[in-house]
Length: 433
Image (cartoon, rainbow, N blue to C red; front, side, top):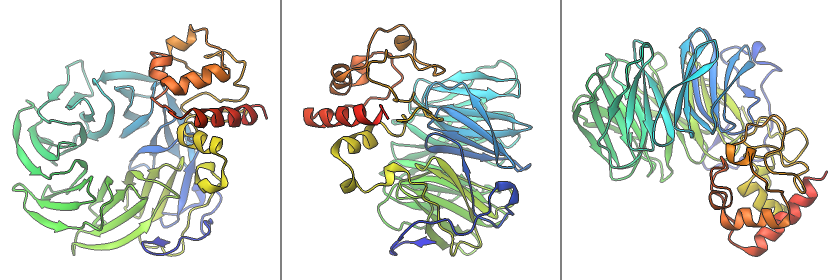
């Protein structure tokens, strides 16, 4: 296990057996198959694990085998599991999709990306948090419109229901946590004004406390209903990105931007553990197994890792030779530009894998929008751009939003002419192999 202040050394797999089906609740295991970072995780009492990814897909895992749910047009950030193979997911395409076993359909849309979801205690409604500055509460049956929660002065980053389902707590980039009536959308009060954006929430099963994680690295626990601080577990200034709670295990898991998970004991209100949980980069998603024996974590590594809560010593993550882990000094400038700007969405080889973007193999001389099987935006489907030194240079000089308006490609610019030339030289060699 990698603990803060220690040298991680060479990463190696040391514990896990060959398949998830062989793993007991106390084993470390991984779920691999996504072609992008894992942004959301949900679990079911039946052992189902559902993952949401930057590769635009949702994975429903049973016995370590995924079923892929396709339909989002951009990164999927959040998912909740409804049971019996049903789920709701949401993402950068502003939409919520209900997966009901007969294919998915759009449950509704925000006016900005949707970053978190919460399922009501009775399973009848889903709340969504969006960068459009609102939260919404969506009935899962019938055709009633959602209740729209408005009042924050910044993006809404997380939502959680009270145990009785009558109140919704919202966390925002404006630094506040607010409370709302779930039936009417009426504001019931402001619980916190933190001063820094609040990213994540977790609620006690009996509603006696609310934990939150903030941009400044603060992790605090508030007594409810009044909001008095009963615990402050701030370690240093690293943004907190995800929280999860398991009542039976009396644990809160706290994930941060540096890839660590801090475990809080809610019986004694102390830090029970603090360990590195990803190869590199943030912990975006956390969920406990139903029995609380494992904590599942998702981040930049294109895999979900599951850590045994009571037996962390000696477990390390396998390094699959992912190129984004290569030290910058060991790469050419062109490769560095590719890793920084392109590698999460695009593969270089003939097999594009499960990526948010099409493979770049054979890029030069190819018409834009022509890789078979990839769901391009309408703009590229009917476009006449041919990829060349000049068009790739223009793409990164102007940015996709100006060079190809309407493209799904995220805004990426490389302002230095020499950096663009080095990237083009790297791509001409790498995509022709």
